[in-house]
Every structure is written in structure tokens, then in C-alpha cells.
Image 1: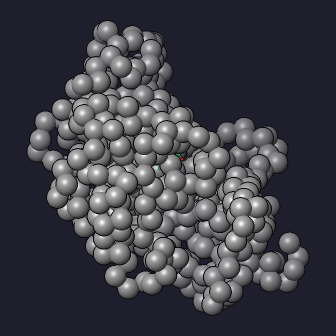
Image 2 (image 1 turned 30 degrees about the vertical axis):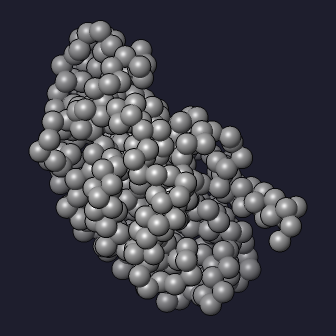
Length: 432
Ligand code: PLP
């Protein structure tokens, strides 16, 4: 394949990956799992606003706390004056992140600036200059976080050259061509092809991973992968960082996606649903990893009392209303229903997920697995017309991503599946 062909293939992947459709509505209000447009039409939201509305929209407990908070203390900059909500939130995050070591918390506004925090402070703390991340990963839009990202949509930006991207073990599209021994293939690749050549472990500060690769296509790695990855990092004393911005905070049926495997990362990155819709992100890490950074990665309004209050109350709601348990139970039900739908349509190549982080991958046919990007966009758009909000992700733009509020009920799941079914029927009859 010559350079021109390579470039045009890459262009195609990038333009597919960036092709996000905007639905022609103007949302006027939202409550629970539903959005309402200005004309009063209601939509069931299977995206939760790209996984931000974890506890659903317009939670009255948060609304009440925010009003009181604004009236009593609207702002202090935490850079100089610590305030009780931020301190309480930090203590709570330290409590739910596994590991009995001393921890520290950094606050920001977005998943991107939190990943920048990791990229900026970790190499400084470890006195090492490189990082490892995964192909297909998405860590954000800022220069640091896009440098960590391995998503093709990010490939045209220069970013930092100090990040080495390694294959993610995708069971449906195995990077080395075989599904057996996927974990050991990837681990051995990192050890033999990366650490022994271009990225010596003694100069590698950390390895950042998504427990489920979300924008990369809701890819769930084999069960032995994350434990083996932790062992690898421990063998070479490389810090292990989990980017839990999308799949953390209960979405997979446990606090964090790595909790399914009893792991203890050195740092965890949080964002999106942490603030129940308010902009707050956090890095919870071993104390020594964040100590060196005091005063070098900070923003005036980071950890402000309003956003901290929202996040603190959000955690209380997740616990008291047993929403994480709901994500586990109803997520399993959703997967089962989608599995049944897969029996009906050849285009559904794969259904996978954990809790309420679910991906439905569309292919032209099951034997070639050729990605069906156009059909995926058409199905999502038809769902929208039928009152269901879903988006698609993936390096081939062919995975319907299902990340609803954790409050979703079985009846709502039945409704969602019946709308998806109708959209596939319409695709089959060429009416969309
Ligand atoms: N990390 C992951 C895993 C994400 O999915 C995202 C956003 O989709 C980010 C980081 C970036 O978060 P933000 O858009 O809040 O900057």
C-alpha cells in the first residue's frame, strides 16, 4: 500500500470517527431518564448526555443542595482557601478508591484537564519521561490528554511524542488476528516489543488504560487482561492509571470498572457523571504522585463549593438509592434483551458490556465483520425519530453506545429495545 492510499484510508477512518450527527431538536427540559423538546415531545435518553447524567436529570436533592449552597457560599478559590465541600468530597473519593496507602485528590473541570494533570505530574513525580497508552483510547481534547489518546480522530494533531500507543485486546477484532491468548499477546507485546526497545521501563512513568474502552467502541477486554496489566506494571514499577471518566462512578455495577477484578491502581481519573451535570473532574492518586505538583496544574475555579457539593451529594444518592446495584441488575437485563435482538438481525455483529456500559457493533455481515458505519448512523437517527436518544462511537463509527442514567427501569429498557427493533426493521425494509 503506497503512502497516498494509506493517507486516504486514514482520512476515511478519521472522517467516519468525527461524523457525529446533531439531532434537530432544541431541548427545553429534562427529568430522570427523559429529555423534552420545546414542542413537548419526550425522548428516552440512552446516552445520558455522553454518560454525564449518571443519576439522571434534574435530581431534586441536588437542586435543593445547590440552591442552599449558592445562597450560603457561592465561591471561594480552593487554590488558597480550602472549603468544606471540597474537603468532604476529597475524603469520600479517598474512601471509595481501593488501596490502603496514603492518597491525595486533585480537582479540575473536565476529563481532559484531569488527564492533563496525570500527564503533567506523574512524569515529574517519577522522574521518568514517557507514558504508555492504548490504541483506540480516548482521554480528551487538551494537548496533554489528546497526546495520551490513541483514537484515530485525534491522530492528525501533533501532541506530545512521549507517549507510546500499544494495542488494546479487543476480543471481537483481535489486534494480532487470533482470539485465543489475547491477553498474553498484548502483555508480551508491551514487554518484548515496547519495553525492550523504544520505551524502556526505567524511563516510563505510567501506563494509562480505560477499563472498558468507550469512545474506541465500548470494547470490553478479556477478564484476565486488567489483572495481568497490573502485574506487568508492578513488575516494572510503572504507575497504573485508570481513566474512569466515562465508565466510573457506578456505571458498570461497581464504583469503578477495575473493581470487578479487585485491583489497586496508583491513580484514578474521574469526570463526566462525577458532578451530576456540573463540571468537575478529579484525580485520586497515591499521595507522592500528586505531591510534586502543588501549584503547577491548577485552575481558579477548580473544586469550587458548588461543583463539589453536586459531586458529594451525587455520591450520597448513588449509595442511598442503590443505583450501582441497579446498574448491575438492569445492565444484565439490557444485555440479555439485546442478545435476543442480535438473533434477529445479521447486522448486529456483537453485543457486549458490563452493567450499563453497553456496545452494539454493526457489521455488513457477520463473517467479514466489515464495519457498517452508515447503517449505524441510520439506525441511531431512526431511533431519534421514534423517541429514543442513542449515539454511536468506535474507531469505525459502527458501535451504538448505550450508557443510560443508572436509574433506568426494566420497562424503559423494554421500550428502548422495542424502538431499536423497529429501527432495524425499517433498515431491513429499506425505509431509512
Ligand atoms: N476520558 C474518557 C474515557 C472519556 O470518555 C472522555 C470524554 O468522552 C474524556 C476523558 C474527556 O472528558 P471531557 O470531555 O470532560 O474533557
